[in-house]
Length: 171
Length: 389
Image (cartoon, rainbow over all chains, first blue to last red):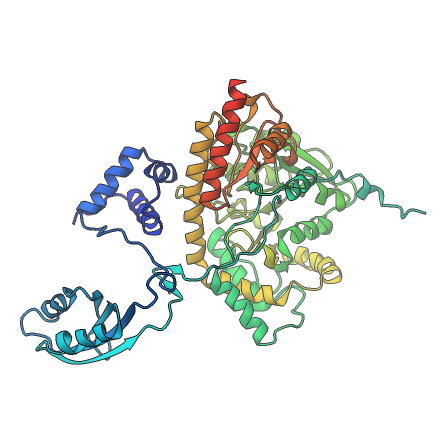
Protein backbone atom coordinates (compact mmCIF):
# COMPACT_ATOMS: atom_id res chain seq x y z
CA UNK A 1 0.00 0.00 0.00
CA UNK A 2 1.19 3.51 -0.79
CA UNK A 3 1.81 5.73 2.19
CA UNK A 4 -0.03 9.01 2.43
CA UNK A 5 2.40 11.93 2.46
CA UNK A 6 2.00 15.09 4.51
CA UNK A 7 0.03 15.57 7.70
CA UNK A 8 -2.41 17.80 5.88
CA UNK A 9 -3.31 15.23 3.27
CA UNK A 10 -3.54 12.67 6.07
CA UNK A 11 -6.19 14.78 7.80
CA UNK A 12 -7.84 15.26 4.44
CA UNK A 13 -7.95 11.51 3.81
CA UNK A 14 -9.34 10.94 7.29
CA UNK A 15 -12.08 13.47 6.60
CA UNK A 16 -12.85 11.97 3.22
CA UNK A 17 -13.06 8.45 4.62
CA UNK A 18 -15.23 9.59 7.54
CA UNK A 19 -17.63 11.30 5.12
CA UNK A 20 -17.81 8.25 2.85
CA UNK A 21 -18.31 5.92 5.80
CA UNK A 22 -21.17 8.07 6.98
CA UNK A 23 -22.77 8.48 3.58
CA UNK A 24 -21.21 6.94 0.44
CA UNK A 25 -24.07 8.38 -1.59
CA UNK A 26 -23.12 11.98 -0.88
CA UNK A 27 -22.78 13.78 -4.23
CA UNK A 28 -19.14 14.28 -5.23
CA UNK A 29 -19.81 18.01 -5.65
CA UNK A 30 -20.83 18.22 -1.99
CA UNK A 31 -17.76 16.25 -0.91
CA UNK A 32 -15.63 18.69 -2.90
CA UNK A 33 -17.22 21.68 -1.15
CA UNK A 34 -16.81 20.14 2.31
CA UNK A 35 -13.18 19.27 1.74
CA UNK A 36 -12.40 22.51 -0.12
CA UNK A 37 -11.03 20.57 -3.11
CA UNK A 38 -11.85 20.53 -6.81
CA UNK A 39 -14.31 17.76 -7.65
CA UNK A 40 -11.82 16.07 -9.99
CA UNK A 41 -9.35 15.79 -7.14
CA UNK A 42 -11.98 14.23 -4.88
CA UNK A 43 -12.74 11.67 -7.58
CA UNK A 44 -9.04 10.93 -7.96
CA UNK A 45 -8.58 10.48 -4.20
CA UNK A 46 -11.54 8.13 -3.96
CA UNK A 47 -10.24 6.13 -6.91
CA UNK A 48 -6.86 5.96 -5.16
CA UNK A 49 -8.45 4.65 -1.96
CA UNK A 50 -10.41 2.08 -3.93
CA UNK A 51 -7.40 0.95 -5.93
CA UNK A 52 -5.24 0.67 -2.84
CA UNK A 53 -7.88 -1.51 -1.22
CA UNK A 54 -8.40 0.99 1.61
CA UNK A 55 -12.04 1.18 0.58
CA UNK A 56 -13.29 -2.37 0.10
CA UNK A 57 -16.89 -1.55 -0.70
CA UNK A 58 -19.96 0.48 0.15
CA UNK A 59 -22.80 -1.07 2.11
CA UNK A 60 -26.31 -0.24 3.19
CA UNK A 61 -27.35 -0.38 6.83
CA UNK A 62 -30.75 -2.07 6.98
CA UNK A 63 -33.19 -1.76 9.85
CA UNK A 64 -33.67 -5.43 10.58
CA UNK A 65 -36.94 -4.92 12.39
CA UNK A 66 -38.40 -3.53 9.17
CA UNK A 67 -36.85 -5.72 6.50
CA UNK A 68 -36.86 -9.52 6.66
CA UNK A 69 -37.33 -9.53 10.42
CA UNK A 70 -37.26 -13.34 10.40
CA UNK A 71 -33.65 -13.47 9.23
CA UNK A 72 -31.51 -15.11 11.86
CA UNK A 73 -28.16 -13.74 12.94
CA UNK A 74 -25.87 -15.88 15.05
CA UNK A 75 -22.57 -15.18 16.70
CA UNK A 76 -20.41 -18.29 16.83
CA UNK A 77 -17.36 -18.60 19.01
CA UNK A 78 -14.97 -21.09 17.48
CA UNK A 79 -11.96 -22.74 19.08
CA UNK A 80 -9.44 -24.11 16.63
CA UNK A 81 -6.07 -25.78 16.67
CA UNK A 82 -3.64 -23.56 14.78
CA UNK A 83 -1.69 -25.24 12.03
CA UNK A 84 2.07 -25.51 12.09
CA UNK A 85 2.24 -23.57 8.85
CA UNK A 86 -0.17 -20.69 8.36
CA UNK A 87 -1.38 -20.46 11.95
CA UNK A 88 -5.01 -19.35 12.05
CA UNK A 89 -5.05 -17.68 8.65
CA UNK A 90 -5.73 -20.63 6.38
CA UNK A 91 -8.53 -22.01 8.48
CA UNK A 92 -10.06 -18.57 9.04
CA UNK A 93 -10.04 -17.89 5.34
CA UNK A 94 -11.66 -21.28 4.70
CA UNK A 95 -14.47 -20.48 7.15
CA UNK A 96 -14.89 -16.96 5.76
CA UNK A 97 -15.62 -18.28 2.27
CA UNK A 98 -18.99 -19.75 3.26
CA UNK A 99 -21.83 -17.51 2.03
CA UNK A 100 -23.53 -17.60 5.41
CA UNK A 101 -20.52 -15.96 7.06
CA UNK A 102 -20.87 -12.16 7.19
CA UNK A 103 -17.82 -11.44 9.32
CA UNK A 104 -14.99 -13.43 10.81
CA UNK A 105 -12.48 -12.15 13.37
CA UNK A 106 -9.50 -13.63 15.19
CA UNK A 107 -10.00 -12.85 18.87
CA UNK A 108 -7.96 -12.71 22.01
CA UNK A 109 -9.25 -14.55 25.07
CA UNK A 110 -11.29 -17.70 25.61
CA UNK A 111 -11.82 -18.67 21.97
CA UNK A 112 -10.10 -18.03 18.65
CA UNK A 113 -12.50 -17.02 15.90
CA UNK A 114 -15.68 -14.99 16.18
CA UNK A 115 -17.94 -15.81 13.24
CA UNK A 116 -21.06 -13.79 12.42
CA UNK A 117 -23.53 -15.83 10.44
CA UNK A 118 -26.73 -14.74 8.75
CA UNK A 119 -29.32 -17.22 7.51
CA UNK A 120 -33.00 -17.44 6.59
CA UNK A 121 -33.94 -19.51 9.61
CA UNK A 122 -32.65 -21.38 12.64
CA UNK A 123 -32.36 -24.66 10.76
CA UNK A 124 -29.98 -23.19 8.25
CA UNK A 125 -27.71 -21.95 11.02
CA UNK A 126 -27.87 -25.32 12.72
CA UNK A 127 -27.00 -27.03 9.45
CA UNK A 128 -24.09 -24.68 8.86
CA UNK A 129 -22.67 -25.26 12.34
CA UNK A 130 -23.13 -29.01 12.47
CA UNK A 131 -22.38 -29.91 8.87
CA UNK A 132 -19.84 -27.34 7.76
CA UNK A 133 -18.17 -25.60 10.63
CA UNK A 134 -17.81 -28.42 13.19
CA UNK A 135 -16.62 -30.89 10.60
CA UNK A 136 -13.56 -28.84 9.70
CA UNK A 137 -10.65 -30.80 11.08
CA UNK A 138 -8.96 -28.15 13.18
CA UNK A 139 -12.21 -26.88 14.74
CA UNK A 140 -12.16 -28.03 18.36
CA UNK A 141 -15.46 -26.60 19.55
CA UNK A 142 -18.18 -24.07 18.75
CA UNK A 143 -20.63 -22.07 20.83
CA UNK A 144 -23.55 -20.45 18.98
CA UNK A 145 -25.60 -17.48 20.25
CA UNK A 146 -28.51 -15.82 18.49
CA UNK A 147 -29.28 -12.14 18.08
CA UNK A 148 -32.57 -11.14 19.70
CA UNK A 149 -32.76 -7.44 18.89
CA UNK A 150 -30.57 -4.76 17.32
CA UNK A 151 -30.10 -1.40 18.99
CA UNK A 152 -27.17 0.00 17.09
CA UNK A 153 -25.39 -1.27 14.02
CA UNK A 154 -22.25 0.13 12.37
CA UNK A 155 -22.78 3.39 14.22
CA UNK A 156 -26.43 3.73 13.19
CA UNK A 157 -29.18 3.61 15.80
CA UNK A 158 -32.20 1.44 15.12
CA UNK A 159 -34.68 3.74 16.74
CA UNK A 160 -35.13 7.44 16.13
CA UNK A 161 -33.45 9.64 18.70
CA UNK A 162 -35.68 12.59 19.46
CA UNK A 163 -33.76 15.81 19.68
CA UNK A 164 -34.71 18.64 21.95
CA UNK A 165 -36.20 21.85 20.63
CA UNK A 166 -33.73 24.61 19.94
CA UNK A 167 -34.41 28.31 19.85
CA UNK A 168 -34.79 29.44 16.26
CA UNK A 169 -32.54 32.48 16.63
CA UNK A 170 -30.10 33.14 19.43
CA UNK A 171 -27.17 35.51 19.82
CA UNK B 1 -49.21 53.90 39.13
CA UNK B 2 -46.70 52.29 36.90
CA UNK B 3 -43.58 50.81 38.43
CA UNK B 4 -40.70 53.11 37.54
CA UNK B 5 -37.79 51.50 35.73
CA UNK B 6 -34.25 52.51 36.63
CA UNK B 7 -32.78 54.99 34.16
CA UNK B 8 -29.76 52.92 33.20
CA UNK B 9 -31.99 49.92 32.46
CA UNK B 10 -34.53 51.92 30.51
CA UNK B 11 -31.73 53.37 28.40
CA UNK B 12 -30.54 49.96 27.24
CA UNK B 13 -32.00 49.44 23.75
CA UNK B 14 -34.05 46.34 23.02
CA UNK B 15 -31.92 43.55 21.54
CA UNK B 16 -31.59 43.87 17.78
CA UNK B 17 -32.56 40.28 17.19
CA UNK B 18 -35.64 40.08 19.43
CA UNK B 19 -38.13 41.34 16.78
CA UNK B 20 -36.58 39.11 14.18
CA UNK B 21 -36.68 36.13 16.55
CA UNK B 22 -40.40 36.66 17.10
CA UNK B 23 -41.13 36.65 13.37
CA UNK B 24 -39.11 33.45 12.91
CA UNK B 25 -40.96 31.84 15.81
CA UNK B 26 -44.30 32.58 14.16
CA UNK B 27 -43.33 30.84 10.90
CA UNK B 28 -43.26 27.19 9.97
CA UNK B 29 -40.54 25.15 8.23
CA UNK B 30 -37.90 27.81 8.59
CA UNK B 31 -34.31 26.68 8.22
CA UNK B 32 -32.44 28.69 10.78
CA UNK B 33 -28.81 29.65 10.36
CA UNK B 34 -29.41 32.10 13.16
CA UNK B 35 -28.58 29.95 16.14
CA UNK B 36 -25.53 30.75 18.23
CA UNK B 37 -25.11 27.33 19.78
CA UNK B 38 -23.86 23.92 18.65
CA UNK B 39 -26.44 21.72 16.92
CA UNK B 40 -24.85 18.70 18.58
CA UNK B 41 -26.42 17.29 21.68
CA UNK B 42 -23.96 17.26 24.60
CA UNK B 43 -21.73 14.16 24.16
CA UNK B 44 -23.29 11.16 25.84
CA UNK B 45 -20.48 10.53 28.33
CA UNK B 46 -21.00 14.06 29.69
CA UNK B 47 -24.78 13.69 29.92
CA UNK B 48 -24.23 10.34 31.58
CA UNK B 49 -21.99 11.97 34.19
CA UNK B 50 -24.80 14.44 34.92
CA UNK B 51 -27.27 11.57 35.35
CA UNK B 52 -24.85 9.78 37.67
CA UNK B 53 -24.45 12.94 39.72
CA UNK B 54 -28.23 13.04 40.23
CA UNK B 55 -28.34 9.32 41.00
CA UNK B 56 -25.79 9.80 43.73
CA UNK B 57 -28.03 12.49 45.19
CA UNK B 58 -25.56 15.32 44.65
CA UNK B 59 -28.28 17.96 44.79
CA UNK B 60 -27.00 20.40 47.40
CA UNK B 61 -25.12 23.67 47.09
CA UNK B 62 -21.44 23.61 46.27
CA UNK B 63 -18.82 26.01 47.55
CA UNK B 64 -19.52 29.53 46.21
CA UNK B 65 -16.51 29.43 43.93
CA UNK B 66 -17.50 26.01 42.57
CA UNK B 67 -16.51 22.40 43.27
CA UNK B 68 -12.79 22.23 44.16
CA UNK B 69 -12.28 19.35 41.75
CA UNK B 70 -13.84 21.34 38.92
CA UNK B 71 -11.63 24.32 39.75
CA UNK B 72 -8.59 22.04 39.64
CA UNK B 73 -9.69 20.70 36.23
CA UNK B 74 -10.20 24.26 34.99
CA UNK B 75 -6.79 25.29 36.30
CA UNK B 76 -5.15 22.33 34.53
CA UNK B 77 -7.03 23.03 31.32
CA UNK B 78 -6.16 26.74 31.29
CA UNK B 79 -2.52 25.96 32.07
CA UNK B 80 -2.46 23.50 29.17
CA UNK B 81 -3.94 25.98 26.70
CA UNK B 82 -2.29 29.24 27.79
CA UNK B 83 0.75 28.19 29.79
CA UNK B 84 -0.55 30.26 32.72
CA UNK B 85 -1.27 28.44 35.98
CA UNK B 86 -4.04 29.67 38.29
CA UNK B 87 -4.33 28.58 41.91
CA UNK B 88 -7.54 26.47 41.90
CA UNK B 89 -8.73 27.47 45.35
CA UNK B 90 -8.29 31.25 45.11
CA UNK B 91 -7.97 32.28 41.47
CA UNK B 92 -10.86 30.43 39.76
CA UNK B 93 -14.59 31.13 39.97
CA UNK B 94 -17.20 28.86 38.39
CA UNK B 95 -20.09 30.90 36.98
CA UNK B 96 -23.48 30.35 35.37
CA UNK B 97 -22.22 30.57 31.80
CA UNK B 98 -19.57 33.05 30.67
CA UNK B 99 -22.28 35.73 30.60
CA UNK B 100 -22.50 35.75 34.38
CA UNK B 101 -18.72 35.83 34.68
CA UNK B 102 -18.55 38.87 32.36
CA UNK B 103 -21.26 40.66 34.31
CA UNK B 104 -19.67 39.86 37.67
CA UNK B 105 -16.20 40.83 36.48
CA UNK B 106 -17.43 44.20 35.16
CA UNK B 107 -19.35 44.92 38.36
CA UNK B 108 -16.27 44.01 40.39
CA UNK B 109 -13.94 46.45 38.62
CA UNK B 110 -16.04 49.39 37.43
CA UNK B 111 -16.87 52.59 39.24
CA UNK B 112 -19.68 54.63 37.66
CA UNK B 113 -18.35 56.39 34.58
CA UNK B 114 -15.36 54.12 34.00
CA UNK B 115 -14.93 53.38 30.33
CA UNK B 116 -14.59 49.90 28.84
CA UNK B 117 -13.44 49.43 25.25
CA UNK B 118 -14.60 46.53 23.12
CA UNK B 119 -14.41 45.70 19.43
CA UNK B 120 -17.41 45.72 17.11
CA UNK B 121 -19.12 43.86 15.45
CA UNK B 122 -19.38 41.66 18.50
CA UNK B 123 -21.57 39.52 20.68
CA UNK B 124 -24.73 41.41 21.61
CA UNK B 125 -24.27 41.46 25.38
CA UNK B 126 -21.01 43.36 25.84
CA UNK B 127 -22.26 46.91 25.58
CA UNK B 128 -25.40 46.28 27.74
CA UNK B 129 -23.35 44.39 30.35
CA UNK B 130 -20.99 47.34 30.66
CA UNK B 131 -23.95 49.72 30.98
CA UNK B 132 -25.57 47.47 33.63
CA UNK B 133 -22.36 47.81 35.64
CA UNK B 134 -22.63 51.65 35.34
CA UNK B 135 -19.69 51.75 32.97
CA UNK B 136 -19.35 53.61 29.69
CA UNK B 137 -19.17 51.22 26.74
CA UNK B 138 -17.10 52.38 23.79
CA UNK B 139 -16.99 50.19 20.72
CA UNK B 140 -13.98 50.23 18.41
CA UNK B 141 -15.04 49.43 14.90
CA UNK B 142 -13.21 46.62 13.13
CA UNK B 143 -13.27 46.14 9.38
CA UNK B 144 -13.69 43.32 6.89
CA UNK B 145 -10.44 44.28 5.11
CA UNK B 146 -8.56 43.56 8.36
CA UNK B 147 -10.45 40.31 8.85
CA UNK B 148 -12.38 42.05 11.66
CA UNK B 149 -9.30 41.93 13.88
CA UNK B 150 -8.78 44.69 16.43
CA UNK B 151 -5.68 46.61 15.35
CA UNK B 152 -3.31 47.83 18.08
CA UNK B 153 -3.22 51.33 16.56
CA UNK B 154 -7.02 51.61 16.73
CA UNK B 155 -6.97 50.42 20.31
CA UNK B 156 -4.24 52.84 21.30
CA UNK B 157 -6.10 55.74 19.70
CA UNK B 158 -9.31 54.84 21.56
CA UNK B 159 -7.79 54.86 25.05
CA UNK B 160 -8.86 57.95 26.98
CA UNK B 161 -8.47 59.28 30.54
CA UNK B 162 -11.48 57.28 31.82
CA UNK B 163 -10.57 54.02 30.06
CA UNK B 164 -10.20 51.24 32.58
CA UNK B 165 -10.50 48.03 30.65
CA UNK B 166 -10.54 46.31 27.28
CA UNK B 167 -12.94 43.47 26.52
CA UNK B 168 -11.74 41.09 23.82
CA UNK B 169 -13.53 38.17 22.18
CA UNK B 170 -11.31 36.14 19.86
CA UNK B 171 -12.34 33.95 18.09
CA UNK B 172 -15.18 36.41 17.54
CA UNK B 173 -18.90 35.93 17.38
CA UNK B 174 -20.19 36.94 14.75
CA UNK B 175 -17.17 37.40 12.45
CA UNK B 176 -15.07 34.31 13.17
CA UNK B 177 -11.99 36.54 13.47
CA UNK B 178 -8.98 35.10 15.29
CA UNK B 179 -5.68 36.52 16.52
CA UNK B 180 -2.25 35.23 15.64
CA UNK B 181 0.38 35.15 18.33
CA UNK B 182 1.93 38.40 17.01
CA UNK B 183 -1.43 40.17 16.89
CA UNK B 184 -2.28 39.09 20.45
CA UNK B 185 1.13 40.25 21.61
CA UNK B 186 0.63 43.65 19.98
CA UNK B 187 -2.73 44.14 21.76
CA UNK B 188 -1.21 42.99 25.06
CA UNK B 189 1.56 45.53 24.59
CA UNK B 190 -1.03 48.33 24.38
CA UNK B 191 -2.76 47.02 27.54
CA UNK B 192 0.56 47.06 29.39
CA UNK B 193 1.63 50.47 28.15
CA UNK B 194 -1.76 52.14 28.68
CA UNK B 195 -2.41 50.33 31.96
CA UNK B 196 -5.65 48.60 30.91
CA UNK B 197 -7.36 45.67 32.60
CA UNK B 198 -8.00 42.98 29.99
CA UNK B 199 -11.19 40.94 30.02
CA UNK B 200 -10.78 38.20 27.46
CA UNK B 201 -13.82 36.10 26.54
CA UNK B 202 -12.34 33.02 24.90
CA UNK B 203 -15.49 30.89 24.72
CA UNK B 204 -14.68 29.86 21.12
CA UNK B 205 -11.00 29.12 21.77
CA UNK B 206 -11.32 25.39 21.07
CA UNK B 207 -12.99 26.06 17.74
CA UNK B 208 -10.16 27.20 15.47
CA UNK B 209 -9.56 25.69 12.06
CA UNK B 210 -6.90 24.86 9.48
CA UNK B 211 -4.55 23.50 12.16
CA UNK B 212 -4.33 26.92 13.80
CA UNK B 213 -4.07 26.87 17.52
CA UNK B 214 -5.60 29.61 19.54
CA UNK B 215 -3.19 32.04 21.18
CA UNK B 216 -4.47 33.90 24.21
CA UNK B 217 -3.20 37.40 25.08
CA UNK B 218 -3.08 36.00 28.63
CA UNK B 219 -0.01 34.04 27.55
CA UNK B 220 1.98 37.22 26.98
CA UNK B 221 4.45 37.81 29.85
CA UNK B 222 3.19 40.43 32.30
CA UNK B 223 -0.46 40.00 31.35
CA UNK B 224 -1.59 37.58 34.08
CA UNK B 225 -1.70 40.33 36.72
CA UNK B 226 -4.07 42.47 34.66
CA UNK B 227 -6.16 39.84 32.89
CA UNK B 228 -9.55 38.38 33.70
CA UNK B 229 -9.64 35.19 31.68
CA UNK B 230 -13.18 34.08 30.78
CA UNK B 231 -14.19 30.80 29.26
CA UNK B 232 -16.81 28.08 29.61
CA UNK B 233 -18.19 24.76 28.50
CA UNK B 234 -20.96 25.89 26.15
CA UNK B 235 -19.42 25.98 22.71
CA UNK B 236 -16.57 23.47 22.69
CA UNK B 237 -18.46 20.75 24.55
CA UNK B 238 -21.95 21.59 23.23
CA UNK B 239 -23.15 22.28 26.78
CA UNK B 240 -25.03 25.57 26.37
CA UNK B 241 -27.98 24.50 28.52
CA UNK B 242 -25.75 23.35 31.37
CA UNK B 243 -24.74 26.98 31.93
CA UNK B 244 -21.17 26.56 33.12
CA UNK B 245 -18.56 29.24 32.61
CA UNK B 246 -15.60 30.41 34.63
CA UNK B 247 -13.36 33.34 35.39
CA UNK B 248 -9.68 33.12 36.28
CA UNK B 249 -7.80 36.08 37.69
CA UNK B 250 -5.69 37.40 40.52
CA UNK B 251 -6.97 36.26 43.95
CA UNK B 252 -8.16 39.72 45.15
CA UNK B 253 -10.22 40.13 41.96
CA UNK B 254 -11.76 36.65 42.30
CA UNK B 255 -12.50 37.46 45.95
CA UNK B 256 -14.32 40.64 44.83
CA UNK B 257 -16.24 38.73 42.14
CA UNK B 258 -17.14 36.14 44.73
CA UNK B 259 -18.89 38.78 46.83
CA UNK B 260 -21.24 39.50 43.93
CA UNK B 261 -21.60 35.89 42.87
CA UNK B 262 -22.37 34.57 46.36
CA UNK B 263 -25.16 37.07 46.99
CA UNK B 264 -26.75 36.94 43.56
CA UNK B 265 -26.17 33.35 42.42
CA UNK B 266 -24.75 31.44 45.39
CA UNK B 267 -23.25 28.76 43.18
CA UNK B 268 -23.55 27.24 39.73
CA UNK B 269 -25.80 24.19 39.38
CA UNK B 270 -24.22 21.15 41.03
CA UNK B 271 -25.28 18.67 38.32
CA UNK B 272 -23.78 20.91 35.66
CA UNK B 273 -20.52 21.26 37.59
CA UNK B 274 -20.21 17.48 37.77
CA UNK B 275 -20.87 17.26 34.03
CA UNK B 276 -18.21 19.94 33.43
CA UNK B 277 -15.62 17.87 35.32
CA UNK B 278 -16.31 14.94 33.01
CA UNK B 279 -16.08 17.22 29.97
CA UNK B 280 -12.75 18.75 30.95
CA UNK B 281 -11.18 15.49 32.07
CA UNK B 282 -12.37 13.22 29.29
CA UNK B 283 -13.97 15.36 26.58
CA UNK B 284 -11.05 15.86 24.17
CA UNK B 285 -12.18 13.26 21.66
CA UNK B 286 -15.69 14.67 21.55
CA UNK B 287 -14.39 18.19 20.98
CA UNK B 288 -12.15 17.01 18.14
CA UNK B 289 -15.02 15.16 16.49
CA UNK B 290 -17.34 18.18 16.58
CA UNK B 291 -14.60 20.54 15.47
CA UNK B 292 -13.82 18.37 12.46
CA UNK B 293 -17.48 18.46 11.50
CA UNK B 294 -17.67 22.27 11.86
CA UNK B 295 -14.59 22.67 9.70
CA UNK B 296 -16.11 20.67 6.83
CA UNK B 297 -19.37 22.58 7.07
CA UNK B 298 -17.43 25.84 7.13
CA UNK B 299 -15.77 24.88 3.86
CA UNK B 300 -19.16 24.08 2.39
CA UNK B 301 -20.98 27.21 3.49
CA UNK B 302 -18.23 29.70 2.56
CA UNK B 303 -17.79 28.14 -0.86
CA UNK B 304 -21.55 28.22 -1.47
CA UNK B 305 -21.86 31.84 -0.28
CA UNK B 306 -19.01 33.01 -2.51
CA UNK B 307 -20.50 31.13 -5.46
CA UNK B 308 -23.81 32.96 -5.05
CA UNK B 309 -21.99 36.29 -5.23
CA UNK B 310 -21.85 37.08 -1.51
CA UNK B 311 -18.22 37.70 -0.71
CA UNK B 312 -17.31 35.73 2.40
CA UNK B 313 -13.97 35.32 4.15
CA UNK B 314 -13.17 31.83 5.41
CA UNK B 315 -13.48 32.19 9.18
CA UNK B 316 -10.57 30.77 11.18
CA UNK B 317 -12.59 30.31 14.34
CA UNK B 318 -16.03 30.06 16.00
CA UNK B 319 -18.87 28.67 13.86
CA UNK B 320 -20.16 31.64 11.90
CA UNK B 321 -19.80 32.73 8.31
CA UNK B 322 -20.19 36.50 7.95
CA UNK B 323 -20.81 37.22 4.26
CA UNK B 324 -20.84 40.70 2.76
CA UNK B 325 -24.32 41.31 1.31
CA UNK B 326 -23.76 44.84 0.01
CA UNK B 327 -23.72 43.64 -3.62
CA UNK B 328 -27.47 42.97 -3.29
CA UNK B 329 -28.19 46.63 -2.60
CA UNK B 330 -30.12 45.72 0.55
CA UNK B 331 -29.42 46.57 4.18
CA UNK B 332 -28.74 43.62 6.44
CA UNK B 333 -32.20 43.98 7.99
CA UNK B 334 -33.92 44.11 4.59
CA UNK B 335 -31.87 41.16 3.38
CA UNK B 336 -32.70 39.05 6.43
CA UNK B 337 -36.40 39.86 6.45
CA UNK B 338 -36.83 39.25 2.74
CA UNK B 339 -34.81 36.04 2.85
CA UNK B 340 -37.02 34.85 5.68
CA UNK B 341 -40.26 35.81 3.95
CA UNK B 342 -39.32 34.64 0.45
CA UNK B 343 -37.21 31.56 1.17
CA UNK B 344 -37.89 30.67 4.83
CA UNK B 345 -34.21 30.89 5.74
CA UNK B 346 -33.23 32.77 8.89
CA UNK B 347 -29.88 34.57 9.14
CA UNK B 348 -29.05 37.27 11.65
CA UNK B 349 -28.68 40.82 10.29
CA UNK B 350 -25.18 42.12 10.93
CA UNK B 351 -26.45 45.41 12.38
CA UNK B 352 -27.56 43.43 15.47
CA UNK B 353 -23.86 43.06 16.33
CA UNK B 354 -23.18 46.77 16.46
CA UNK B 355 -21.11 49.24 14.49
CA UNK B 356 -19.50 47.73 11.44
CA UNK B 357 -21.93 44.82 11.21
CA UNK B 358 -24.17 46.60 8.70
CA UNK B 359 -23.73 45.17 5.21
CA UNK B 360 -23.17 41.66 6.56
CA UNK B 361 -25.30 38.81 7.85
CA UNK B 362 -24.34 36.03 10.24
CA UNK B 363 -24.88 32.44 9.09
CA UNK B 364 -24.19 29.81 11.72
CA UNK B 365 -22.67 26.56 10.52
CA UNK B 366 -23.49 24.92 13.81
CA UNK B 367 -26.38 23.55 11.80
CA UNK B 368 -26.82 20.09 10.25
CA UNK B 369 -25.27 19.65 6.79
CA UNK B 370 -28.60 18.77 5.17
CA UNK B 371 -30.10 21.99 6.47
CA UNK B 372 -27.09 23.99 5.37
CA UNK B 373 -27.38 22.48 1.87
CA UNK B 374 -31.05 23.34 1.58
CA UNK B 375 -30.48 26.81 3.01
CA UNK B 376 -27.68 27.47 0.52
CA UNK B 377 -29.84 26.32 -2.41
CA UNK B 378 -32.62 28.68 -1.29
CA UNK B 379 -30.21 31.57 -0.73
CA UNK B 380 -28.71 31.00 -4.17
CA UNK B 381 -32.15 31.37 -5.72
CA UNK B 382 -32.81 34.47 -3.61
CA UNK B 383 -29.52 36.12 -4.53
CA UNK B 384 -29.81 35.39 -8.23
CA UNK B 385 -33.21 37.13 -8.19
CA UNK B 386 -31.65 40.12 -6.40
CA UNK B 387 -28.58 40.30 -8.60
CA UNK B 388 -30.59 40.08 -11.83
CA UNK B 389 -33.18 42.62 -10.68
